[in-house]
Amino acid sequence: MPQNRFRSLNTALQERFGEKIYKLSLNGGCTCPNRDGTLGTRGCIFCSAGGSGDFASSPALSITEQIEDAKKRLAGKRPVQRYIAYFQAYTNTYAPIEHLRMIFTEAITHPDVAVLSVATRPDCLGPDVLELLYELNQIKPVWVELGLQTIHEETASLIRRGYPLPVFDEAMDHLKAIGVETVVHAILGLPGETPDMILDTVRYINTSGADGIKLQLLHILKDTDLAAYYKDAGFHVLTLDEYVDLVIRCLEISRPDLVIHRLTGDGPKDLLIAPLWSQAKRQVLNTIHRELKNRDTYQGRLYTP
Image (tube, rainbow, N blue to C red; front, top):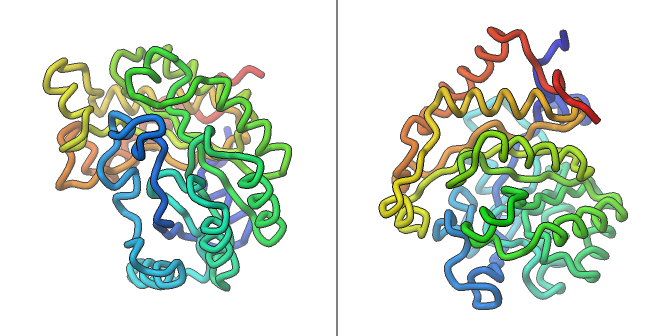
């Protein structure tokens, strides 16, 4: 039995840097091709006005000011010396290359930043962006987070992801070729998806060469098209027990070396419509840990190459 039942991000960071490292959510002032009219104007169906950056700092501040502001908000936790600069809001490689070079360089050269993490779309990684990421990766580690969400094209169409699966494959190949680490997002509980469909997505991520995975519970937030769809269609929303079972099944088939960056997530409480049980994030995580122990199971137990 492994000492830890899954390879958490905290464990991986402690092994790599020898200390606790926290993530600082930043806003680079980017938009998204799914919002500016290139692919659409309303974003993905589940996307709130903050563009997945509801907890990020204000783009009115400089990157250095955002870093210092975020550090102050973490000051109540245990002392931390270094951080991950996480560009979270919208699509963070969807801007002129001069702007990207400016904001990423400002972040990665900050003395307290250990890692630069960039959340983006697979269809927004042109040759100039890849070259910039390669250059930055020579300074400090660079991670790119890709919102795959699902491998199933029917679901991808429903949620208005805006790109076909081969675009993700190509992006992963390019990122691996330049030595940049990758983290892939998968959403659990998308309308119409069965547990087997979700497990197929995790298996695909296993074989994609991803270094890490984020398992994200589907949140239905106010003023999103998903909220309207939920009101009209009334699709099934996962219960806590269903979600815990699904997370454990995902972990069991995950590559043993895959870093688990997230087991759930918390939407803004003032926007959350469902599932309301997800507001108690600590309880959700404790339930997952307890159930892993009760089942005497762990990450990779059912993994097959």
